[in-house]
Image 1 (tube, rainbow, N blue to C red):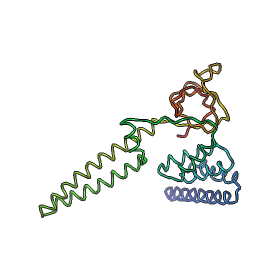
Image 2: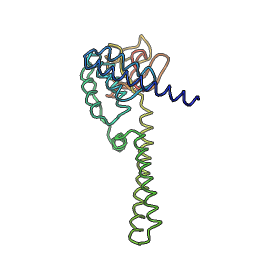
Image 3: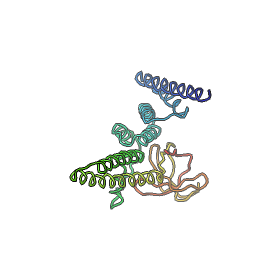
Image 4: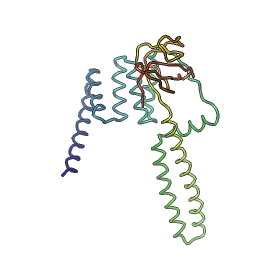
Length: 247
C-alpha cells in the first residue's frame, strides 16, 4: 500500500513539474518573462531540476537583462549538460552583458591536456562508457573462449586487451573529472557592485571592484568572508552575501 502511495505521489509530482514547465514555456512565448521565471523556479523549489529548466530560466532572466541570474542559471544548466552547444552559446551572450572585462589566463602543460580530454564528458558519462567497454570485453572473452579457429582466437584475444585498455582509460578519466569538478567551487557575483578586499575585513584596502555576473572561484571561507580567485588569477576576499555558489 505504501509503495503504491509513493508511486502515486511521484507521478503526481512529475505531472506538476511538467505542467509548470509547459506553462513557463507558454509565458515565455507570450513574452511574459516574469511569469515564466515563477513557473520555472516553482519546479526547482519542488526539488526537481534539469538542464532544460535552468536553461529556460536563464533565457527568461536574459530577456529581462538580469545579468547575474541569467549567467547563474546557464552555468547550472551546463553542469547538468556540459556538452550542450546551445547552452554554451547563450552563456557567452550573457557574459557579454557583464561590466568586468577579466581576462582568462589559459592553462598550459600536461595538466591542461588531461583536463581538456576529460572535460569532453561529464564523469557519469565516462562511467557509462567504461560499462559499455566492459560488456564488449566480456563479449570478446566469450568469443575467444568458444571460438575453435586460431585466427578468430587471436582476433578476440587482441580485442580483449584493447577493450581492457579502454576501460582503464575511461575509468581513470571519470575519476579525474569527478575530482576536478568537485574541487572547483565556482560562484557568480549577484551584488550590483562589491569590493574585492586584500584582507577579510571591511576596512581593508580594495584590490578592485567587481560587478554582477562576474564568475569567481572560492578558495576558502572565514566567517562571512570568502577568499576567491578570478579567471586572471587575481585573488582577494569578498563578502559571502555578494555571491551565489553554482554548486
